[in-house]
Every structure is written in C-alpha cells, then in structure tokens.
Image 1 (tube, helix red, strand yellow):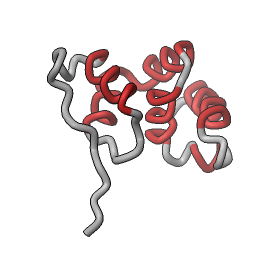
Image 2: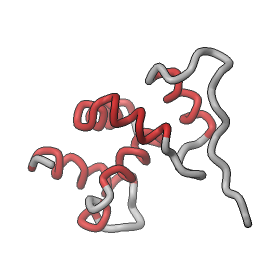
Image 3: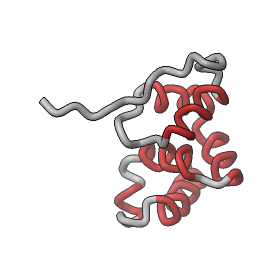
Image 4: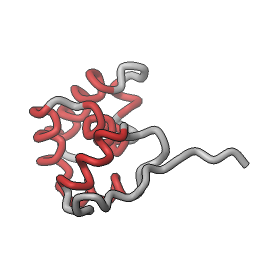
Length: 98
C-alpha cells in the first residue's frame, strides 16, 4: 500500500469506521472498502474504487459476509460492477445459527 493509499484509507476509516481507530482499521483495508461501498458518499466511492480497482471491489462483493451490505447497496453494486442483469441479483449472505 502506498503512502497516498494509507492516507486515503485512514481518512475513510475515520469517517466510516468510527468505532475503531484509523490505525487499527488500516490493518483490514478490505473492511474500509466494504464500508465505503455500503454507506459512502459519491466522492469517497470514486476515491476508493480508484485506489483498489473494480476487480478487487467485485471480489469483496462476491465474498461479502452477512451484514456487510444493505439490500440497496447489495443490488446496486451487483449491477454497477457487472455481476448481475436486472432481476438476477443473487441473494444476500445470511447468518446461520448451527
């Protein structure tokens, strides 16, 4: 990760992962990306996609865990990243109690 990316990710972490310190959040940059994809504003989404690329965003969405995306974001990103056609968005991940 470059210094510019670290600076970007720390500022995004401070804004979107307010319950942990930016230094702690930067240890899991994928969590920062997912949170920005889920609730980020347009400028922050553009910045994070420029930093990680659409392929990485696809991978994070495909391997998303229960609770990481709202239904609205889940559908949006499947369409936006070319992972689904209208009416064919896969079901969201769900928590299962064993």
